[in-house]
Length: 503
Length: 137
Image 1: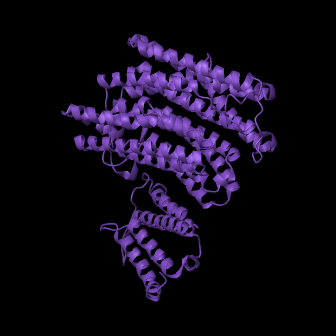
Image 2: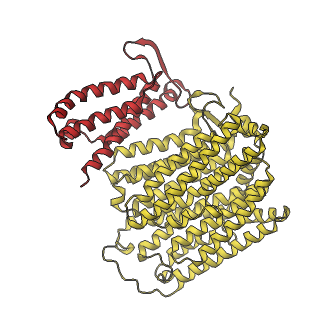
Image 3: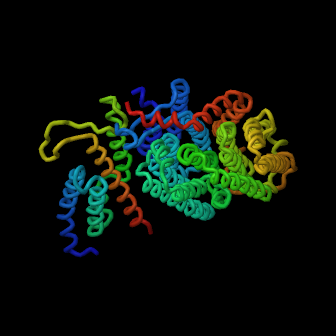
Protein backbone atom coordinates (compact mmCIF):
# COMPACT_ATOMS: atom_id res chain seq x y z
CA UNK A 1 0.00 0.00 0.00
CA UNK A 2 2.84 2.39 0.87
CA UNK A 3 4.45 2.45 -2.58
CA UNK A 4 1.13 3.60 -4.04
CA UNK A 5 0.89 6.52 -1.66
CA UNK A 6 1.36 9.09 -4.42
CA UNK A 7 -1.97 8.40 -6.12
CA UNK A 8 -3.98 8.67 -2.92
CA UNK A 9 -4.73 12.39 -3.37
CA UNK A 10 -6.01 11.55 -6.85
CA UNK A 11 -8.20 8.65 -5.71
CA UNK A 12 -9.47 10.64 -2.76
CA UNK A 13 -10.75 13.47 -4.96
CA UNK A 14 -12.56 10.93 -7.16
CA UNK A 15 -14.04 9.26 -4.08
CA UNK A 16 -15.16 12.64 -2.80
CA UNK A 17 -16.96 13.58 -6.01
CA UNK A 18 -18.74 10.21 -6.11
CA UNK A 19 -19.89 10.62 -2.52
CA UNK A 20 -21.06 14.16 -3.29
CA UNK A 21 -23.07 12.90 -6.27
CA UNK A 22 -25.01 10.60 -3.94
CA UNK A 23 -26.09 13.70 -2.00
CA UNK A 24 -27.26 15.49 -5.16
CA UNK A 25 -30.25 17.27 -3.60
CA UNK A 26 -28.94 17.76 -0.08
CA UNK A 27 -26.94 20.95 -0.38
CA UNK A 28 -26.12 21.48 3.28
CA UNK A 29 -24.73 17.93 3.48
CA UNK A 30 -22.67 18.64 0.35
CA UNK A 31 -21.14 21.71 1.97
CA UNK A 32 -20.04 19.75 5.02
CA UNK A 33 -18.64 16.85 2.96
CA UNK A 34 -16.81 19.15 0.58
CA UNK A 35 -15.14 21.18 3.31
CA UNK A 36 -14.13 18.23 5.52
CA UNK A 37 -13.07 16.28 2.42
CA UNK A 38 -10.92 19.14 1.20
CA UNK A 39 -9.30 19.36 4.62
CA UNK A 40 -8.49 15.64 4.50
CA UNK A 41 -7.13 16.11 0.97
CA UNK A 42 -4.76 18.79 2.29
CA UNK A 43 -3.48 16.41 4.96
CA UNK A 44 -3.03 13.61 2.40
CA UNK A 45 -1.20 15.84 -0.06
CA UNK A 46 0.98 17.24 2.69
CA UNK A 47 1.93 13.72 3.73
CA UNK A 48 2.70 12.74 0.12
CA UNK A 49 4.81 15.88 -0.17
CA UNK A 50 6.70 15.00 2.99
CA UNK A 51 7.23 11.41 1.80
CA UNK A 52 8.62 12.47 -1.58
CA UNK A 53 10.75 15.17 0.04
CA UNK A 54 12.34 12.57 2.32
CA UNK A 55 12.54 9.59 -0.05
CA UNK A 56 12.98 11.10 -3.50
CA UNK A 57 10.88 10.55 -6.63
CA UNK A 58 8.20 7.89 -6.62
CA UNK A 59 6.22 6.25 -9.39
CA UNK A 60 3.23 3.94 -9.77
CA UNK A 61 2.52 1.82 -12.83
CA UNK A 62 -1.26 1.96 -13.21
CA UNK A 63 -2.70 -1.47 -13.91
CA UNK A 64 0.72 -2.99 -13.20
CA UNK A 65 1.78 -2.50 -16.84
CA UNK A 66 5.47 -1.71 -17.02
CA UNK A 67 6.60 1.68 -18.25
CA UNK A 68 6.84 2.77 -21.09
CA UNK A 69 3.87 0.62 -22.18
CA UNK A 70 1.33 1.42 -19.49
CA UNK A 71 0.35 4.68 -17.88
CA UNK A 72 2.70 5.83 -15.13
CA UNK A 73 2.06 8.25 -12.33
CA UNK A 74 5.24 10.03 -11.32
CA UNK A 75 5.68 12.16 -8.24
CA UNK A 76 8.76 14.31 -8.43
CA UNK A 77 9.11 17.31 -6.16
CA UNK A 78 7.45 19.66 -8.67
CA UNK A 79 4.38 17.42 -8.99
CA UNK A 80 3.84 16.96 -5.27
CA UNK A 81 4.34 20.66 -4.61
CA UNK A 82 1.66 21.52 -7.13
CA UNK A 83 -0.66 18.82 -5.80
CA UNK A 84 -0.24 20.31 -2.33
CA UNK A 85 -0.96 23.82 -3.63
CA UNK A 86 -4.01 22.52 -5.50
CA UNK A 87 -5.44 21.00 -2.34
CA UNK A 88 -4.71 24.17 -0.35
CA UNK A 89 -6.54 26.39 -2.84
CA UNK A 90 -9.19 23.68 -3.08
CA UNK A 91 -9.84 23.90 0.66
CA UNK A 92 -9.97 27.70 0.62
CA UNK A 93 -12.30 27.88 -2.37
CA UNK A 94 -14.48 25.10 -0.98
CA UNK A 95 -15.11 27.11 2.19
CA UNK A 96 -15.61 30.28 0.18
CA UNK A 97 -18.05 28.54 -2.21
CA UNK A 98 -20.14 27.26 0.68
CA UNK A 99 -20.66 30.84 1.82
CA UNK A 100 -20.80 32.79 -1.42
CA UNK A 101 -22.35 30.67 -4.19
CA UNK A 102 -26.13 30.98 -4.31
CA UNK A 103 -28.43 27.99 -3.85
CA UNK A 104 -29.69 27.99 -7.44
CA UNK A 105 -26.18 27.22 -8.58
CA UNK A 106 -25.38 24.68 -5.85
CA UNK A 107 -28.51 22.73 -6.73
CA UNK A 108 -27.06 21.73 -10.10
CA UNK A 109 -24.12 19.79 -8.77
CA UNK A 110 -21.65 22.58 -8.11
CA UNK A 111 -19.65 20.69 -5.50
CA UNK A 112 -19.29 17.33 -7.32
CA UNK A 113 -18.10 19.16 -10.44
CA UNK A 114 -15.76 21.30 -8.36
CA UNK A 115 -14.09 18.17 -7.03
CA UNK A 116 -13.93 16.67 -10.51
CA UNK A 117 -12.00 19.79 -11.48
CA UNK A 118 -9.59 19.24 -8.59
CA UNK A 119 -9.32 15.57 -9.62
CA UNK A 120 -8.35 16.65 -13.14
CA UNK A 121 -5.74 19.06 -11.82
CA UNK A 122 -4.24 16.50 -9.43
CA UNK A 123 -4.11 13.93 -12.21
CA UNK A 124 -2.51 16.31 -14.68
CA UNK A 125 0.24 17.15 -12.20
CA UNK A 126 0.94 13.52 -11.37
CA UNK A 127 0.80 11.75 -14.71
CA UNK A 128 3.93 10.73 -16.56
CA UNK A 129 2.17 9.92 -19.82
CA UNK A 130 1.52 12.48 -22.53
CA UNK A 131 -1.80 11.09 -23.70
CA UNK A 132 -2.98 10.66 -20.15
CA UNK A 133 -2.13 14.34 -19.64
CA UNK A 134 -4.49 15.10 -22.52
CA UNK A 135 -7.23 13.08 -20.83
CA UNK A 136 -6.83 15.06 -17.60
CA UNK A 137 -6.94 18.26 -19.62
CA UNK A 138 -10.27 17.10 -21.04
CA UNK A 139 -11.66 16.37 -17.57
CA UNK A 140 -10.59 19.85 -16.51
CA UNK A 141 -12.14 21.52 -19.57
CA UNK A 142 -15.46 19.71 -19.20
CA UNK A 143 -15.78 20.43 -15.48
CA UNK A 144 -14.63 24.03 -15.90
CA UNK A 145 -17.18 24.50 -18.66
CA UNK A 146 -19.94 23.32 -16.34
CA UNK A 147 -18.68 25.56 -13.54
CA UNK A 148 -18.46 28.60 -15.80
CA UNK A 149 -21.98 28.18 -17.22
CA UNK A 150 -23.79 26.98 -14.08
CA UNK A 151 -26.49 29.53 -13.29
CA UNK A 152 -26.93 30.51 -16.95
CA UNK A 153 -26.81 34.31 -16.84
CA UNK A 154 -26.47 36.00 -20.20
CA UNK A 155 -23.02 37.48 -19.58
CA UNK A 156 -21.88 34.16 -18.20
CA UNK A 157 -22.87 32.25 -21.31
CA UNK A 158 -21.20 34.82 -23.52
CA UNK A 159 -17.95 34.44 -21.60
CA UNK A 160 -18.31 30.67 -21.59
CA UNK A 161 -18.58 30.46 -25.36
CA UNK A 162 -15.29 32.33 -25.79
CA UNK A 163 -13.67 30.26 -23.07
CA UNK A 164 -14.86 26.98 -24.49
CA UNK A 165 -14.06 27.68 -28.16
CA UNK A 166 -10.45 28.63 -27.61
CA UNK A 167 -9.79 25.95 -25.03
CA UNK A 168 -11.19 23.16 -27.14
CA UNK A 169 -9.11 24.46 -30.06
CA UNK A 170 -6.03 24.38 -27.84
CA UNK A 171 -6.82 20.79 -26.87
CA UNK A 172 -7.12 19.81 -30.51
CA UNK A 173 -3.73 21.34 -31.28
CA UNK A 174 -2.26 19.58 -28.25
CA UNK A 175 -3.73 16.29 -29.51
CA UNK A 176 -2.25 16.91 -32.98
CA UNK A 177 1.13 17.49 -31.39
CA UNK A 178 0.85 14.18 -29.53
CA UNK A 179 -0.05 12.45 -32.79
CA UNK A 180 2.99 13.92 -34.59
CA UNK A 181 5.26 12.90 -31.73
CA UNK A 182 3.77 9.41 -31.60
CA UNK A 183 4.24 9.05 -35.35
CA UNK A 184 7.91 10.00 -34.99
CA UNK A 185 8.82 7.89 -31.99
CA UNK A 186 6.07 5.38 -31.28
CA UNK A 187 5.88 6.27 -27.61
CA UNK A 188 3.73 8.39 -25.31
CA UNK A 189 5.60 8.02 -22.06
CA UNK A 190 7.31 11.33 -21.31
CA UNK A 191 10.47 9.79 -19.88
CA UNK A 192 10.73 7.40 -22.80
CA UNK A 193 10.12 10.25 -25.26
CA UNK A 194 12.99 12.23 -23.75
CA UNK A 195 15.48 9.70 -25.11
CA UNK A 196 13.67 8.92 -28.33
CA UNK A 197 13.03 12.50 -29.47
CA UNK A 198 16.73 13.30 -29.08
CA UNK A 199 17.52 10.43 -31.47
CA UNK A 200 15.02 11.40 -34.19
CA UNK A 201 16.79 12.49 -37.38
CA UNK A 202 13.93 14.50 -38.86
CA UNK A 203 14.61 17.61 -36.76
CA UNK A 204 12.18 19.72 -38.79
CA UNK A 205 9.22 17.63 -37.71
CA UNK A 206 10.38 17.62 -34.07
CA UNK A 207 10.43 21.39 -34.26
CA UNK A 208 6.89 21.38 -35.64
CA UNK A 209 5.71 19.17 -32.76
CA UNK A 210 7.42 21.49 -30.28
CA UNK A 211 5.69 24.54 -31.76
CA UNK A 212 2.33 22.74 -31.67
CA UNK A 213 2.85 21.99 -27.97
CA UNK A 214 3.78 25.62 -27.43
CA UNK A 215 0.56 26.80 -29.11
CA UNK A 216 -1.63 24.26 -27.30
CA UNK A 217 -0.25 24.85 -23.82
CA UNK A 218 0.32 28.52 -24.57
CA UNK A 219 -3.37 29.07 -25.16
CA UNK A 220 -4.17 27.47 -21.82
CA UNK A 221 -1.46 29.45 -20.06
CA UNK A 222 -2.71 32.60 -21.89
CA UNK A 223 0.57 33.81 -23.38
CA UNK A 224 0.78 36.70 -25.80
CA UNK A 225 -1.25 36.29 -28.97
CA UNK A 226 -3.49 33.61 -27.50
CA UNK A 227 -4.79 35.15 -24.28
CA UNK A 228 -7.98 36.89 -25.44
CA UNK A 229 -10.33 34.31 -24.00
CA UNK A 230 -9.13 34.93 -20.45
CA UNK A 231 -10.17 38.55 -19.76
CA UNK A 232 -13.34 37.91 -21.75
CA UNK A 233 -14.52 35.10 -19.51
CA UNK A 234 -12.94 35.18 -16.04
CA UNK A 235 -15.07 37.99 -14.65
CA UNK A 236 -18.41 36.37 -15.53
CA UNK A 237 -18.82 33.32 -13.22
CA UNK A 238 -19.17 33.56 -9.40
CA UNK A 239 -16.04 34.75 -7.62
CA UNK A 240 -15.36 31.30 -6.14
CA UNK A 241 -15.17 29.80 -9.63
CA UNK A 242 -12.92 32.61 -10.89
CA UNK A 243 -10.69 32.00 -7.90
CA UNK A 244 -9.99 28.38 -8.72
CA UNK A 245 -9.68 29.19 -12.45
CA UNK A 246 -7.41 32.17 -11.96
CA UNK A 247 -5.28 30.40 -9.40
CA UNK A 248 -4.79 27.05 -11.05
CA UNK A 249 -5.94 26.63 -14.65
CA UNK A 250 -3.45 28.97 -16.34
CA UNK A 251 -0.72 27.65 -14.07
CA UNK A 252 -1.51 24.17 -15.36
CA UNK A 253 -0.57 25.43 -18.84
CA UNK A 254 2.68 26.78 -17.40
CA UNK A 255 3.34 23.45 -15.66
CA UNK A 256 2.80 21.56 -18.93
CA UNK A 257 5.16 23.95 -20.76
CA UNK A 258 7.81 23.50 -18.07
CA UNK A 259 7.45 19.73 -18.16
CA UNK A 260 7.57 19.40 -21.94
CA UNK A 261 10.38 21.89 -22.54
CA UNK A 262 12.63 20.64 -19.75
CA UNK A 263 12.12 16.95 -20.43
CA UNK A 264 11.27 16.30 -24.08
CA UNK A 265 12.49 19.25 -26.16
CA UNK A 266 15.64 20.19 -24.30
CA UNK A 267 18.24 22.75 -25.34
CA UNK A 268 16.45 24.14 -28.38
CA UNK A 269 17.95 27.62 -28.95
CA UNK A 270 15.31 28.67 -31.47
CA UNK A 271 12.48 27.86 -29.07
CA UNK A 272 14.23 29.61 -26.22
CA UNK A 273 14.35 32.82 -28.24
CA UNK A 274 10.68 32.50 -29.20
CA UNK A 275 9.74 31.98 -25.54
CA UNK A 276 11.66 35.09 -24.51
CA UNK A 277 10.02 37.27 -27.17
CA UNK A 278 6.59 35.90 -26.28
CA UNK A 279 7.27 36.51 -22.60
CA UNK A 280 8.13 40.17 -23.18
CA UNK A 281 5.01 40.69 -25.30
CA UNK A 282 2.84 38.86 -22.75
CA UNK A 283 4.12 41.02 -19.91
CA UNK A 284 3.57 44.15 -21.95
CA UNK A 285 0.06 43.40 -23.19
CA UNK A 286 -1.12 42.08 -19.80
CA UNK A 287 0.24 45.08 -17.95
CA UNK A 288 -1.14 47.68 -20.32
CA UNK A 289 -4.46 45.86 -20.46
CA UNK A 290 -4.77 45.92 -16.67
CA UNK A 291 -3.98 49.62 -16.59
CA UNK A 292 -7.05 50.67 -18.57
CA UNK A 293 -9.62 48.40 -16.91
CA UNK A 294 -12.19 49.60 -14.41
CA UNK A 295 -13.74 46.33 -13.19
CA UNK A 296 -11.68 44.91 -10.30
CA UNK A 297 -11.97 41.35 -11.59
CA UNK A 298 -10.92 42.37 -15.09
CA UNK A 299 -7.86 44.08 -13.62
CA UNK A 300 -6.93 40.84 -11.87
CA UNK A 301 -7.57 38.87 -15.08
CA UNK A 302 -5.12 41.02 -17.02
CA UNK A 303 -2.61 40.78 -14.17
CA UNK A 304 -2.73 36.98 -14.50
CA UNK A 305 -1.60 37.37 -18.12
CA UNK A 306 1.08 39.89 -17.17
CA UNK A 307 2.56 37.58 -14.53
CA UNK A 308 2.43 34.48 -16.71
CA UNK A 309 5.03 36.42 -18.71
CA UNK A 310 7.53 36.18 -15.82
CA UNK A 311 7.33 32.42 -15.79
CA UNK A 312 7.65 32.10 -19.57
CA UNK A 313 10.65 34.45 -19.46
CA UNK A 314 12.38 32.27 -16.90
CA UNK A 315 11.66 29.18 -18.96
CA UNK A 316 13.07 30.93 -22.04
CA UNK A 317 16.34 31.74 -20.26
CA UNK A 318 16.61 28.07 -19.28
CA UNK A 319 19.26 28.16 -16.59
CA UNK A 320 18.94 26.46 -13.24
CA UNK A 321 18.58 29.71 -11.31
CA UNK A 322 16.02 31.07 -13.77
CA UNK A 323 13.94 27.91 -13.38
CA UNK A 324 14.25 28.30 -9.60
CA UNK A 325 12.73 31.75 -10.01
CA UNK A 326 9.94 30.36 -12.19
CA UNK A 327 9.01 27.71 -9.65
CA UNK A 328 9.09 30.19 -6.76
CA UNK A 329 6.90 32.55 -8.75
CA UNK A 330 4.51 29.71 -9.60
CA UNK A 331 4.10 28.80 -5.93
CA UNK A 332 3.55 32.43 -4.93
CA UNK A 333 1.23 33.17 -7.84
CA UNK A 334 -1.16 30.25 -7.26
CA UNK A 335 -1.77 31.33 -3.66
CA UNK A 336 -2.07 35.05 -4.37
CA UNK A 337 -4.27 34.89 -7.48
CA UNK A 338 -6.72 32.48 -5.84
CA UNK A 339 -6.87 34.84 -2.90
CA UNK A 340 -7.37 37.99 -4.98
CA UNK A 341 -10.37 36.63 -6.85
CA UNK A 342 -11.93 35.71 -3.52
CA UNK A 343 -11.21 39.25 -2.35
CA UNK A 344 -13.02 40.58 -5.42
CA UNK A 345 -15.97 38.37 -4.45
CA UNK A 346 -15.92 39.79 -0.93
CA UNK A 347 -15.83 43.37 -2.24
CA UNK A 348 -18.80 42.59 -4.46
CA UNK A 349 -20.68 41.10 -1.54
CA UNK A 350 -20.13 44.22 0.57
CA UNK A 351 -20.90 46.87 -2.04
CA UNK A 352 -22.73 44.96 -4.82
CA UNK A 353 -20.32 46.42 -7.36
CA UNK A 354 -16.88 45.68 -8.76
CA UNK A 355 -16.38 48.97 -10.55
CA UNK A 356 -13.36 50.86 -9.20
CA UNK A 357 -14.91 54.24 -9.99
CA UNK A 358 -18.00 53.53 -7.96
CA UNK A 359 -16.33 51.82 -5.01
CA UNK A 360 -14.58 53.61 -2.18
CA UNK A 361 -14.31 54.19 1.53
CA UNK A 362 -13.37 50.66 2.45
CA UNK A 363 -10.64 51.70 4.82
CA UNK A 364 -12.98 53.99 6.74
CA UNK A 365 -15.72 51.36 7.07
CA UNK A 366 -13.75 48.13 7.36
CA UNK A 367 -10.24 48.94 8.64
CA UNK A 368 -9.35 45.39 9.79
CA UNK A 369 -10.61 43.81 6.60
CA UNK A 370 -8.68 46.35 4.55
CA UNK A 371 -5.47 45.45 6.34
CA UNK A 372 -6.16 41.78 5.58
CA UNK A 373 -6.70 42.52 1.89
CA UNK A 374 -3.51 44.57 1.94
CA UNK A 375 -1.50 41.33 2.32
CA UNK A 376 -2.43 39.59 -0.96
CA UNK A 377 -2.52 42.85 -2.92
CA UNK A 378 0.96 43.92 -1.94
CA UNK A 379 2.31 40.35 -2.07
CA UNK A 380 1.38 40.52 -5.73
CA UNK A 381 3.35 43.72 -6.20
CA UNK A 382 6.28 42.14 -4.40
CA UNK A 383 7.20 44.75 -1.83
CA UNK A 384 9.92 43.09 0.24
CA UNK A 385 9.61 41.06 2.37
CA UNK A 386 6.27 39.93 0.87
CA UNK A 387 6.22 36.90 -1.38
CA UNK A 388 6.31 38.39 -4.90
CA UNK A 389 9.70 39.98 -4.32
CA UNK A 390 11.99 36.96 -3.96
CA UNK A 391 11.55 35.15 -7.29
CA UNK A 392 12.26 38.37 -9.18
CA UNK A 393 15.79 38.45 -7.75
CA UNK A 394 16.56 35.12 -9.42
CA UNK A 395 14.88 36.13 -12.67
CA UNK A 396 16.51 39.55 -12.99
CA UNK A 397 19.90 38.23 -11.89
CA UNK A 398 19.80 35.50 -14.51
CA UNK A 399 18.57 37.98 -17.12
CA UNK A 400 21.76 39.99 -16.62
CA UNK A 401 23.95 36.91 -16.59
CA UNK A 402 22.53 35.57 -19.86
CA UNK A 403 22.53 39.10 -21.32
CA UNK A 404 18.80 39.22 -22.03
CA UNK A 405 18.49 42.90 -21.24
CA UNK A 406 15.10 43.26 -22.90
CA UNK A 407 13.70 40.58 -20.63
CA UNK A 408 15.14 42.32 -17.58
CA UNK A 409 13.60 45.56 -18.76
CA UNK A 410 10.24 43.85 -19.26
CA UNK A 411 10.31 42.29 -15.78
CA UNK A 412 11.16 45.62 -14.16
CA UNK A 413 8.49 47.32 -16.27
CA UNK A 414 5.93 44.73 -15.14
CA UNK A 415 6.80 45.15 -11.47
CA UNK A 416 6.47 48.87 -11.86
CA UNK A 417 3.16 48.70 -13.70
CA UNK A 418 1.78 46.21 -11.16
CA UNK A 419 2.70 48.66 -8.43
CA UNK A 420 0.89 51.48 -10.26
CA UNK A 421 -2.21 49.36 -10.81
CA UNK A 422 -2.40 48.10 -7.23
CA UNK A 423 -1.70 51.59 -5.86
CA UNK A 424 -4.50 52.94 -8.06
CA UNK A 425 -6.81 50.15 -6.90
CA UNK A 426 -5.92 50.84 -3.27
CA UNK A 427 -6.54 54.56 -3.68
CA UNK A 428 -9.82 54.09 -5.55
CA UNK A 429 -11.37 51.27 -3.55
CA UNK A 430 -9.98 51.82 -0.07
CA UNK A 431 -9.11 55.50 0.38
CA UNK A 432 -11.39 57.47 -1.90
CA UNK A 433 -14.72 58.77 -0.55
CA UNK A 434 -17.44 56.39 -1.65
CA UNK A 435 -19.97 57.30 -4.29
CA UNK A 436 -23.60 56.47 -3.76
CA UNK A 437 -24.24 53.06 -5.28
CA UNK A 438 -27.98 52.50 -5.67
CA UNK A 439 -29.04 49.63 -3.42
CA UNK A 440 -30.15 46.52 -5.25
CA UNK A 441 -33.50 45.41 -3.85
CA UNK A 442 -32.98 41.65 -3.94
CA UNK A 443 -29.26 41.61 -3.22
CA UNK A 444 -28.15 40.02 0.03
CA UNK A 445 -25.52 42.40 1.43
CA UNK A 446 -22.58 41.41 3.59
CA UNK A 447 -23.96 43.34 6.54
CA UNK A 448 -27.23 41.35 6.40
CA UNK A 449 -25.83 37.84 6.64
CA UNK A 450 -25.24 35.82 9.77
CA UNK A 451 -21.98 35.88 11.68
CA UNK A 452 -21.14 32.27 10.81
CA UNK A 453 -21.40 33.01 7.11
CA UNK A 454 -19.31 36.15 7.49
CA UNK A 455 -16.59 33.99 9.03
CA UNK A 456 -16.88 31.61 6.10
CA UNK A 457 -16.27 34.53 3.76
CA UNK A 458 -13.22 35.82 5.58
CA UNK A 459 -11.62 32.60 6.83
CA UNK A 460 -10.32 31.37 3.42
CA UNK A 461 -8.86 34.81 2.70
CA UNK A 462 -7.09 34.76 6.07
CA UNK A 463 -5.89 31.22 5.40
CA UNK A 464 -4.33 32.00 2.02
CA UNK A 465 -2.94 35.32 3.27
CA UNK A 466 -1.14 33.46 6.04
CA UNK A 467 0.35 31.09 3.46
CA UNK A 468 1.40 34.11 1.36
CA UNK A 469 3.03 35.64 4.42
CA UNK A 470 4.84 32.37 5.07
CA UNK A 471 6.08 32.31 1.46
CA UNK A 472 7.35 35.86 1.96
CA UNK A 473 8.89 35.56 5.41
CA UNK A 474 9.96 31.93 5.05
CA UNK A 475 11.40 32.59 1.61
CA UNK A 476 14.47 30.59 2.55
CA UNK A 477 12.42 27.37 2.70
CA UNK A 478 10.59 28.05 -0.53
CA UNK A 479 13.87 28.97 -2.24
CA UNK A 480 15.34 25.67 -1.05
CA UNK A 481 12.32 23.81 -2.40
CA UNK A 482 12.41 25.68 -5.71
CA UNK A 483 16.11 25.10 -6.25
CA UNK A 484 15.66 21.41 -5.56
CA UNK A 485 12.83 21.29 -8.13
CA UNK A 486 14.92 23.26 -10.65
CA UNK A 487 17.80 20.88 -10.10
CA UNK A 488 15.55 17.89 -10.77
CA UNK A 489 14.15 19.54 -13.90
CA UNK A 490 17.52 20.48 -15.33
CA UNK A 491 19.00 17.03 -14.66
CA UNK A 492 16.13 15.07 -16.11
CA UNK A 493 18.10 11.81 -16.15
CA UNK A 494 16.94 11.13 -12.59
CA UNK A 495 13.29 11.42 -13.68
CA UNK A 496 13.88 9.17 -16.69
CA UNK A 497 15.63 6.54 -14.59
CA UNK A 498 12.87 6.53 -11.98
CA UNK A 499 10.17 6.01 -14.58
CA UNK A 500 11.87 3.43 -16.77
CA UNK A 501 13.29 1.34 -13.92
CA UNK A 502 10.75 -1.46 -13.59
CA UNK A 503 12.38 -3.74 -11.06
CA UNK B 1 -46.33 8.19 -32.27
CA UNK B 2 -48.79 6.35 -30.05
CA UNK B 3 -49.87 3.74 -32.56
CA UNK B 4 -51.11 0.41 -31.31
CA UNK B 5 -48.44 -1.47 -33.26
CA UNK B 6 -45.58 0.44 -31.67
CA UNK B 7 -47.14 0.22 -28.22
CA UNK B 8 -47.58 -3.53 -28.42
CA UNK B 9 -44.17 -4.05 -29.95
CA UNK B 10 -42.41 -1.90 -27.37
CA UNK B 11 -43.74 -4.04 -24.53
CA UNK B 12 -42.00 -7.05 -26.04
CA UNK B 13 -38.95 -5.14 -27.26
CA UNK B 14 -38.10 -3.70 -23.85
CA UNK B 15 -37.05 -7.00 -22.21
CA UNK B 16 -35.44 -8.25 -25.42
CA UNK B 17 -33.35 -5.12 -25.86
CA UNK B 18 -32.35 -5.14 -22.18
CA UNK B 19 -31.27 -8.75 -22.47
CA UNK B 20 -29.36 -7.93 -25.63
CA UNK B 21 -27.61 -5.03 -23.91
CA UNK B 22 -26.44 -7.37 -21.15
CA UNK B 23 -25.23 -9.83 -23.77
CA UNK B 24 -23.23 -7.05 -25.45
CA UNK B 25 -21.86 -5.97 -22.06
CA UNK B 26 -20.58 -9.44 -21.19
CA UNK B 27 -19.26 -10.10 -24.69
CA UNK B 28 -17.10 -7.00 -24.52
CA UNK B 29 -13.97 -8.41 -22.96
CA UNK B 30 -12.55 -10.14 -26.02
CA UNK B 31 -14.99 -9.23 -28.79
CA UNK B 32 -16.63 -5.99 -29.95
CA UNK B 33 -19.05 -4.74 -27.32
CA UNK B 34 -18.63 -3.63 -23.73
CA UNK B 35 -20.16 -1.35 -21.14
CA UNK B 36 -20.49 1.75 -23.28
CA UNK B 37 -22.35 0.18 -26.21
CA UNK B 38 -24.36 -2.03 -23.88
CA UNK B 39 -25.40 1.00 -21.86
CA UNK B 40 -26.52 2.82 -24.98
CA UNK B 41 -28.64 -0.12 -26.08
CA UNK B 42 -30.27 -0.33 -22.65
CA UNK B 43 -30.99 3.39 -22.79
CA UNK B 44 -32.53 3.00 -26.24
CA UNK B 45 -34.84 0.32 -24.85
CA UNK B 46 -36.26 2.78 -22.32
CA UNK B 47 -36.40 5.63 -24.83
CA UNK B 48 -38.42 3.45 -27.22
CA UNK B 49 -40.75 2.53 -24.39
CA UNK B 50 -41.27 6.21 -23.56
CA UNK B 51 -42.00 7.03 -27.21
CA UNK B 52 -44.72 4.43 -27.30
CA UNK B 53 -46.22 4.78 -23.82
CA UNK B 54 -45.36 8.30 -22.75
CA UNK B 55 -42.68 9.56 -20.39
CA UNK B 56 -44.82 9.11 -17.26
CA UNK B 57 -45.26 5.39 -17.77
CA UNK B 58 -41.57 4.83 -18.39
CA UNK B 59 -40.71 6.77 -15.26
CA UNK B 60 -43.09 4.71 -13.15
CA UNK B 61 -41.56 1.60 -14.71
CA UNK B 62 -38.09 2.72 -13.64
CA UNK B 63 -39.24 3.66 -10.10
CA UNK B 64 -36.14 5.79 -9.38
CA UNK B 65 -34.54 8.77 -11.05
CA UNK B 66 -32.04 7.54 -13.66
CA UNK B 67 -29.53 10.15 -12.46
CA UNK B 68 -29.02 7.95 -9.41
CA UNK B 69 -27.32 5.39 -11.70
CA UNK B 70 -24.44 7.79 -12.37
CA UNK B 71 -22.83 7.81 -8.90
CA UNK B 72 -23.72 4.12 -8.46
CA UNK B 73 -21.89 3.17 -11.65
CA UNK B 74 -18.98 5.44 -10.85
CA UNK B 75 -18.69 3.92 -7.39
CA UNK B 76 -18.73 0.39 -8.86
CA UNK B 77 -15.98 1.26 -11.35
CA UNK B 78 -13.99 3.06 -8.67
CA UNK B 79 -14.07 0.11 -6.28
CA UNK B 80 -13.22 -2.35 -9.05
CA UNK B 81 -10.13 -0.23 -9.69
CA UNK B 82 -9.43 -0.08 -5.97
CA UNK B 83 -9.92 -3.81 -5.34
CA UNK B 84 -6.38 -4.91 -6.38
CA UNK B 85 -4.97 -2.35 -3.93
CA UNK B 86 -7.09 -3.73 -1.11
CA UNK B 87 -6.94 -7.47 -1.78
CA UNK B 88 -3.66 -8.10 -3.57
CA UNK B 89 -1.46 -5.09 -2.82
CA UNK B 90 -1.04 -4.46 -6.55
CA UNK B 91 -1.21 -1.01 -8.15
CA UNK B 92 -4.51 0.73 -8.93
CA UNK B 93 -6.51 -0.86 -11.77
CA UNK B 94 -4.50 -4.12 -11.93
CA UNK B 95 -6.72 -6.91 -13.25
CA UNK B 96 -7.80 -9.44 -10.62
CA UNK B 97 -9.07 -12.74 -12.03
CA UNK B 98 -10.97 -15.71 -10.63
CA UNK B 99 -9.31 -18.65 -12.32
CA UNK B 100 -12.19 -21.11 -12.44
CA UNK B 101 -14.65 -21.44 -15.26
CA UNK B 102 -18.05 -19.90 -14.62
CA UNK B 103 -20.90 -21.01 -16.89
CA UNK B 104 -22.37 -18.28 -19.14
CA UNK B 105 -19.86 -15.63 -18.03
CA UNK B 106 -16.60 -17.43 -18.84
CA UNK B 107 -14.15 -15.99 -16.33
CA UNK B 108 -14.78 -13.27 -13.81
CA UNK B 109 -12.36 -10.42 -13.19
CA UNK B 110 -12.31 -6.93 -11.78
CA UNK B 111 -12.42 -5.61 -15.37
CA UNK B 112 -15.95 -6.96 -15.71
CA UNK B 113 -17.14 -4.94 -12.73
CA UNK B 114 -15.46 -1.89 -14.18
CA UNK B 115 -17.40 -2.41 -17.40
CA UNK B 116 -20.63 -2.86 -15.46
CA UNK B 117 -19.95 0.48 -13.80
CA UNK B 118 -19.51 2.08 -17.22
CA UNK B 119 -22.77 0.46 -18.32
CA UNK B 120 -24.67 1.99 -15.40
CA UNK B 121 -23.12 5.43 -15.90
CA UNK B 122 -24.00 5.44 -19.60
CA UNK B 123 -27.59 4.39 -18.93
CA UNK B 124 -27.89 7.03 -16.21
CA UNK B 125 -26.41 9.87 -18.24
CA UNK B 126 -28.30 9.10 -21.45
CA UNK B 127 -31.66 8.70 -19.74
CA UNK B 128 -31.17 11.82 -17.62
CA UNK B 129 -30.37 13.88 -20.70
CA UNK B 130 -33.23 12.50 -22.79
CA UNK B 131 -35.81 12.72 -19.99
CA UNK B 132 -34.78 16.29 -19.20
CA UNK B 133 -35.02 17.35 -22.83
CA UNK B 134 -38.42 15.73 -23.36
CA UNK B 135 -39.75 17.27 -20.15
CA UNK B 136 -38.74 20.81 -21.14
CA UNK B 137 -41.77 22.90 -22.15
